[in-house]
Amino acid sequence: MLEKYSVRTDLALEEKERFESDNVEIAGVVLEEEYDEEREMRITKVLIETENGAKSMGKPVGAYLTLEAPNLAVPDEDYHREISEKLADYIRMLVENKCAEKGEKGEETPKLEDMDISVLVVGLGNRQVTPDALGPYVADNLCVTRHIVKEYGKYAMGMEHAKLVSAIVPGVMGQTGMETMEIVKGIVEETKPDVVVAIDALAARNSKRLNRTIQVADTGIHPGSGVGNHRNGLTEESLGVPVIGIGVPTVVDAATIVNDTMENLIDALETSNVLKGVGDVLRTYNNAEKYELVKELISPHLNGMFVTPKDEDELVKQISYTISEALNMLFTNA
Image 1 (cartoon, rainbow, N blue to C red):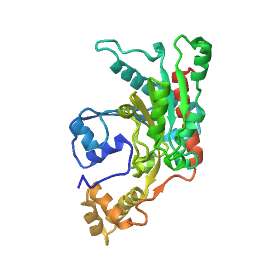
Image 2: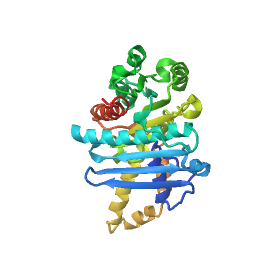
Image 3: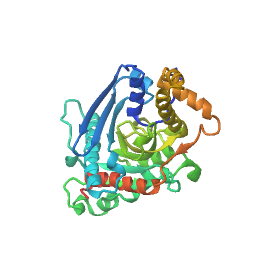
Image 4: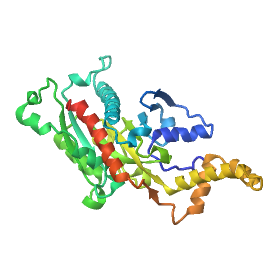
């Protein structure tokens, strides 16, 4: 059943939760959690350490950091600044680790503040489709510096170790006729950045995580995978440089919503004297079986439908500022 159980999600955390709910342990996958009670932030680190773990999870070997903040959807500038600072810390850690891997063994992990590196930020997605516009919006708000440093030198930025930041919004295949990876690879070969940071909208399994969760991964990003539109991934293997992927879930599939409703229905049936037996029978199904049942019931008309909140236009702009602010304070001290 697990092989058939394909949840529409880009979040490594939800993949791990899927197995935990069925009491299945995955060898080679480590989960670490911490909770900031004051800021109401939950930080989860999923480490996929082996190829067997990667096969079970359906994701490459690497580190996946997930920041969950229910108030992320609230327009509070001070709170979003705190999220940006926390996000910048995680991106810094992944960049430093990737740069350390490129150095000689035994060397101390370099500090980002002491590096002269070039960073290419790629805003993935379609600006014309609101839930998919996160990447382009982040790129719009970036402080790009590559042209300034190239023209006037790093001291024009007032920093001893300046970062060359450039940005590109490659669009989608329907607009350009080209794979995103082909466009970005050409830019990488021409500009030779030390690291690529790719931002994209994701799909979630849990509707409560929409616009309230940010995932940062050192394995790159695979555009469209969460909605079944698999494209060539932006990874270190495909581009030749380390790729940090940042994503926010903005859509959830119809089967998930129906499945969550079914859970509430089962709870209601179990409290009914007349229909309690029906609830008891449905309760014997595990999560995988219930999800597959829902997919069969709503197929074919709703099986490919994805849903987003009605105020997504405001939410995606708000979160794009939060992510761009983290990148700006990390790479340009802005």
